[in-house]
Length: 372
Image (cartoon, rainbow, N blue to C red; front, side, top):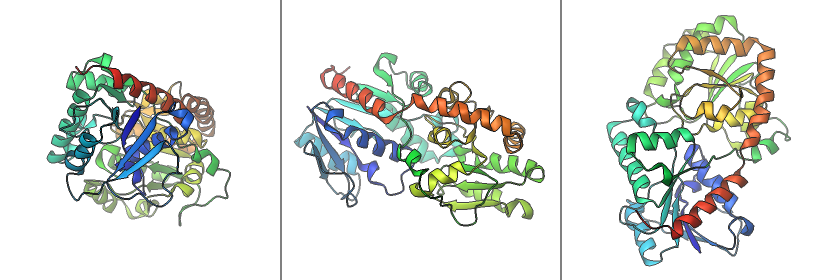
């Protein structure tokens, strides 16, 4: 069987979120034993970086550059001319004119809950692409039960068509902890860490307000590590409005390369992730892997991922509750150690090897499933 995969998002150098998901899942599917003798055909919209993937006889990389509308024109043409037995898009959209056997991963439907975190054009595209993926594909992968529930609620997708398959954490993260520590310039303990793209749905403005409320009670820096995302202007404005003494303790190192991420997380007293909505919150599990206490929202998929107490959960809309939780984590060593131990136990539930096994079974099922 030929499995075609849209790998265009996996070629990004600075991978976050869905890009990291696509990259890690493709990596997990690379060993011949992981795909049961099937052939992988990876489609990319530009020549991939040198040494992007190790050569393998069952893997073909099809670089098909095209200036605009790559998915719906160039990729669609490739799929029509050389159809795979099943097509999989882990982080993008199924071409509008492709009706062959396909599987799509839907990561989250946060735009239904917080449309103001996106432009009107982005909301319109996200609504269309999510509904299109869910209806056109033979089977749908959802990152979490929360995402599956949202697909059924908002887009009325048959739940029998949706499979919940958890992603995992990059296994390199744990290995990097054995390397000599390396932190971005200006960061030194004690500090609290936010690690994600700086955009409205990550709730950064409320986090800044919460930190300001307790800053005089704790000695910590607040490190906001991540690249600026869309509509980051309110975050910039909130930073500009901070009291001078507080602003001096808020650091923005930008995107943190993989080689520094593990030690940046491990060196923090707590990882703060009060996101408004997540289909799957990688930073929560990254904190678990690195032995750092985690604060997370009590909504969307995050309670599901935290399991039995692997994070301190708060209402992401309640700034006072976030502030209280931040102060507790900054001052209560016993609480932090309890969360760390539960985190180590929790993260064992997730592995990319398991994700690959489940994904392959779904691709095999979709290849023979009748379109509905």
